[in-house]
Amino acid sequence: MKAVSLQFLIVLMLAALLNMAAFAVEPDEVLDDPALEARAIEISRNLRCVVCQSQSIDDSNAPLAKDMRVIVRERLTAGDSDAEVYAFLVDRYGDYVLLKPPVQQNTVLLWAAPALVLLAACIGAAFFLMRMKRADEEAGDTAGDNAKPGL
Amino acid sequence: MSRLFLYLPLALFALLAAWFAVGLRHDPSRIPSVLIDKPLPEFSLPAIEGHDNALSSENIVGEVALVNVFASWCVPCAIEHPQLMKIAAEEDLLITGINWKERPGDGAAWLRRLGDPYNYIGDDADGRVAIDFGVTGAPETFVVGHDGRIRYKQVGPITEQIWTEDIKPVVDQLRKEAEK
Image (cartoon, rainbow over all chains, first blue to last red; front, side, top):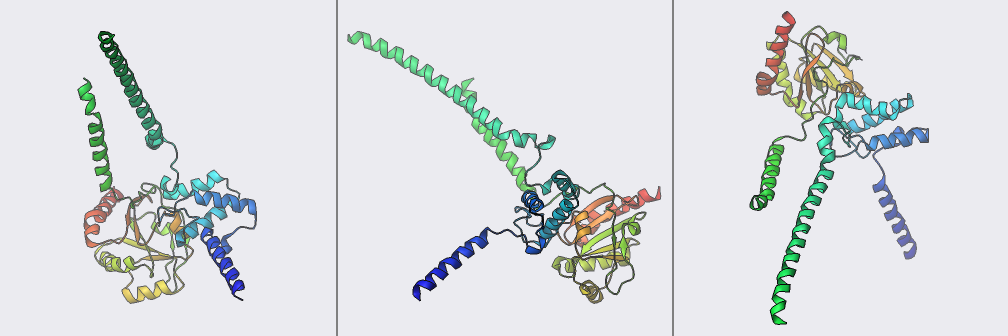
């Protein structure tokens, strides 16, 4: 009896874990066509919930996020391409609705920043190593000079 | 020369500190509207329960108007409401309402209790028109020029101060443009 209840507990805990991994998508939103639904989920993960701001609409339980998920699915069912679905929401909410900012004039610096920092670090490291080498050589020379009188 | 080099990290730090200090003054929750200076979205909404005047974009184009997104479930809307009543009483201005994601009857009951400042009210039960307006929460208010373009967006309740300092000047300016 005890063993059964333990098993039951484990199953319950696993079920709870599975639940945590579930998304905010409600059963009545899911599309019948699995391919379309997969695209809808992929798009929803890249769209910001404008109420909660740091969540995607796929993760958010906010009513507005639900409305947006429904719109994404409606547009896809109507035959829109992924780009058209994104454009539909960007027209209304701006680039802000995209969790990943597009590469364009006002975001070039943002996207280039990691490469620029790496470049700066490499230049700094090169300078440092060159100076170390020079210091080593000078130290080596003086060591040589000092060594002579001892011979 | 190499001495000056030593100050480079300090200079970089100062630059970044200044950058971040400016950044801290921006409110990250303020989302700029892409609809400013764009034409009003085309829409047509049914009237709410007990009201005759439904709301469509045709009611708004051609006039200087406020489009106010409200709901009875929205607490800041109740805070804003007296100011809207005041504007309706004092100004000769078209005030329209989008009753956002409301259960049937709730919006009408709310207006019966608090008063009705709106010339036209549309029932946006599924929130579709609100998304066309890029609404992120209620209340939000759009100021529309007589040419049908959105010229200003207020996020959050209109207070007396916001009305006199921010919105009324825009409305007055738009009225002047309309007279030309």
